Image (cartoon, rainbow, N blue to C red):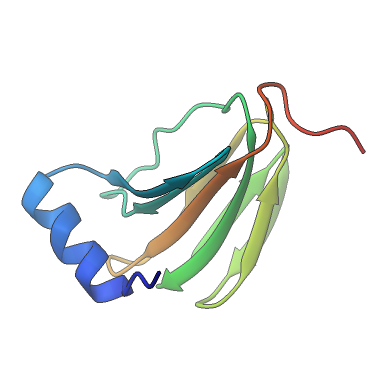
Length: 106
């Protein structure tokens, strides 16, 4: 199985949405996400991983702000407030949800 970022972004553009699920297997769901100007997402019910495809900006995760660049890995536990801010127009990221509702235990 292979998903190319450019092909994923082309599919997303045709859908005219900010995210699209591209693959599911068991508890794993893989999405492409490309917000326009503002990231409006709310906390999610499962653990989540982002891998930045393109662009730069800042990521706020449970009140902690950090900068990001392409290739960066970002983890968010289930239920935690998070968002991307001050990102460039070319920003896009892979999103991977996994595990049970409420997140995995440490």
